[in-house]
Amino acid sequence: MLSKKGMGVSPSPTMLIDAKAKEMISQGLDVIGFGAGEPDFDTPSHIQEAAIKAINEGHTRYTPAAGTLELKQAICRKLKTDNALEYDPSQIVVSNGAKHSLFNSLAALLNPGDEVLIPAPYWVSYPELVKLNDGIPVIVKASKDNNLKVTAGDLKNALSAKTKALLLNSPSNPTGQVYSKDELKAICDVCCEHNIYVVSDEIYEKLLYDEAIHYSIASFNEKIKELTIVVNGVSKSYAMTGWRIGYTASTAEIAKVMAAIQSHTASNPNSIAQKATLAALDESQKCVGEMLVAFDERRKYMCERIKNIPGLDALTPRGTFYLFVDLSGVIGKSFQGKTLEGCDDFAGQLLESRKVAIVPGSGFGAPNYVRLSFATSMDNIIKGLDRLEAFVNDLQ
Ligand SMILES: *Cc1c(COP(=O)(O)O)cnc(C)c1O
Image (tube, rainbow, N blue to C red):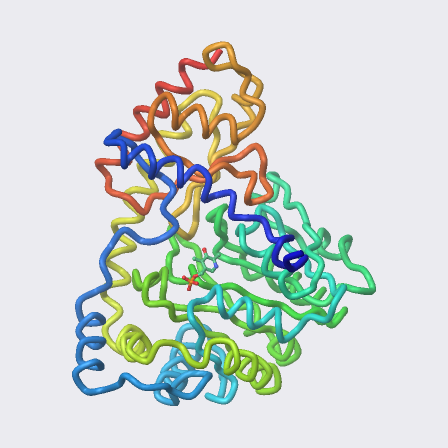
């Protein structure tokens, strides 16, 4: 019999539609995809050049398990400038992407049976990462009245003697919502009072719109800083998803445990990608702003269009590159005689009949929603939304 732990992990449900869409594309069908979980831009050229230089200069060997000192120092500078957080390089662990950082965080924190609070809608990997580390995911449902953000009260109600940690994600994938300073402070108070660790996934911190401001929960006081593992990386801000660099900032004690785990499972993150990340963090940040301008233009267009389709409703994203669309107004309607029972039916029929791929909310713990990414060209967005609108208008 294969491992119970391994067999207990669900394959990513967001991949099902994606696989189907790719199959249709390979058959030559004209599919428009709103599924992208990564920027559609190339990695900025000065970052690419830093990597090429690293190869030419022979930076091709193992590095220290937790990353090179120069990169950890650059991360400390970044955390100070952007997040008002002071860390020493001994508190930083560089890993193979923020997802790996999340895995290491949970591996360092959890004992069998420990409960981890996960606000829903959540990123698909959170519950599985908790299970893989012998923890128990406790889903805390956020209400639409609070823009799909959990409150301190929601978290309090979910506490038990076994609650070990909270997995927080702001700006949030999939909702695009950003927790305000006051909301975070209230959550901080609950965690401090009950000694709950916070794994704070801040990977979208630079993708903010309107007047949204990102605060790292770790910055509020010394106690919460001790309890928090800040998780971040370069994938989303710098269009570097393929490079696989993420990092954590935590107490030196936690960092040491994570580094030991990593040293036996992955050795070190890629040496060349570490050099590229150094360039991303230290050199001009103009590239981030340029991508943001493009994302913002698409965001505004998409929001406007979706809100004008009767039956659909979307939360205006204040961060990330996702639009989370409420289907409550169309679930239960029928398409060509078949009732749409939920978001999976909606996404399935839309793909089959109109060749538009979107991500059903079921994998995010939000069965009446779908996620549309605006990490795709304006041309695609216009064409795809025309098709979506026609599909919804056909529902009976
Ligand atoms: C993309 C993403 C990550 C992982 O990023 P990598 O650095 O590419 O591993 C982590 N958390 C959320 C919420 C994401 O959307």
